[in-house]
Structure formats: C-alpha cells, structure tokens
Image (cartoon, rainbow, N blue to C red):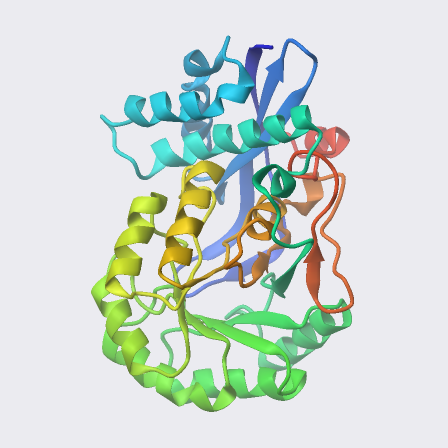
Length: 361
C-alpha cells in the first residue's frame, strides 16, 4: 500500500454576513482542501484555512511542499512522515504557515488511516466517549445589538445547545456587563455561558472586567490578553474565580506545555491548525491531562470532535459552522446538547464534492 498523490483544492466560504470580533472583521473562512490518494483507491481528506483568504495561495503552496515526503509512503507509517516533516520545516520554524500547512496534510493522513482501518478516528485512538458536550460559537458577536444577542441565544437553545459563547471587548465595563446580563437573562441560569475577549485587553483591564462579570457565573473567560503574554494570563487566572481558557493561538504541544507550566489557563483549547494537525493535538491533550487541566478545542469542529471523544479530560467542543457548506454530513446533537461522534470511518465527515465545485476558488 502506497501513497500515490497529494492534491489540493481552494474553496471560498463567505460568511452569511461579516462578523466583528474584538480585533478584526471576518468576511470569509476560505480553505485549502487536502486529498491524499493511495494505490488501493482510498483517499484521505483534510483542510487548513485562512480568514478572509489572506495568504491562501501561500498556504496551498506550503501544503504542496510536503508532497515529496509523502509520495511512495505506506500510510500506516504516518509517524515517520511527521518526524521527517518536523525536521524539514526546522529552518523556517515550527509556527506560522509551516505548521498550518503541515496541519492540512496531517489531518488528511489521519482520515486516511481511519478509512483504511474502517474505524472512526476516535475508535482508532481508543474512544473515551460516544458524544462530547458542545457549545455554539457561531454567533453573539460584538456587531450584534442586545436584541439580536437575545434572539441568537434563544435560537441556539432551540437548536439543542446547552452551552453558548458570546464576545466581549475593549469597551467600557458597563457596556460589556449590559450585554452579558442580557444574554444570561435570555438563556437562564442553567446554560453554560462563555465570554471571549479575543486578546483585546490589558492585564488590569481583564482583571477588572473579569471580576465585574463573575456575577453571571460564566463557564470561562477566554483569551483576554495577547496570546503570547502567558505570565499575564497566569496573573488573570489567579485573580478570578471564573476559569480562564486559552491556547487557540499558541503553536504545537510545546507551546501548550509552556502554558501549562505557567498555569496560564484553567481550560486548554488547542487549535488543530496551529498544533500542526492531530498528531500534536493529541500530544497537547495528554500534556493537559498530566496537569489535570480540562481540554477543549478551537474551530475545525468536524475533526476536533473525534479527537476530543478520545481524550478522557475532554471538556467541551467548539461548534463553529464555517466549514459546514462543504461537508456531506453535519454534526448532530443529542438531547443533552452533546455532539454525537459518528460511527463512519476516518473523521466521519466527508467533503461534498458538488459543494466543493460550487465553492471552488
């Protein structure tokens, strides 16, 4: 059994309407789809992406640069690929586009291995659960009015979610309090409510806002300061009763280890792309478990779901619908707001090639 080809497709995925985070406007989540073919006719699928399509062609070229390390490889020897790829990118470093491109390939390799074995990736790893709690993340942005926030929150509950995330930002404390209060009143006391500041605050601002929000019983306060300020995160975490979540912007399990050692987060949320793919995501999960820290995820819901299902310290899945338009299957919730892990092989979610052609860029 050999890998015979590495193929890519660019898709353009505009959002229904532009959304405003604390740091920039998001208009699209354009992606590089990755396909790894074998001489047995089985193909693995993965992806990496760029907000608003920025540098997407460079990301595609980075993915393609791993072709010589893949062609001719037995896909059951995927760890040998990762070892050589890790060495191969050392000159440019283990962060940024090199790691994002590697993630696209690694996600496709894990899908391929699952398909060849006839197992969902969660089972391939040794599943700990058949469903994972999920929170709705595709709304409640800074650009929403208070009336819109309450309507969006109610809609998420009607769709079966029992946890939701809203955004806060560098505005007066009372402005943020008014919005958080409105959402809490709309969903009631039993729904998990998270608040994400998208790295927009200073340490003193974050502590002040975090303390002011504690009356609303938030499940977590997310990324209040720039991601590289792990000492600042640790100070905030020690100052608040509300758990602090972070990690989505840090790179590889080495970055996660630094955060854990510095006690920068009560909930670690590695991003599949910035980890460099599932291989490092899994390592990050093991590290978090060794520090008794809960594990969440960032974006890439369809692929993160099986990974969290195999992690005993999994806490909750971020459900972000940005990539749903190109998948043939969508994540389903059970009656308790948990995402059901599919029993289909690989990631359990396959690209809808007609949709891919419609969104081709």
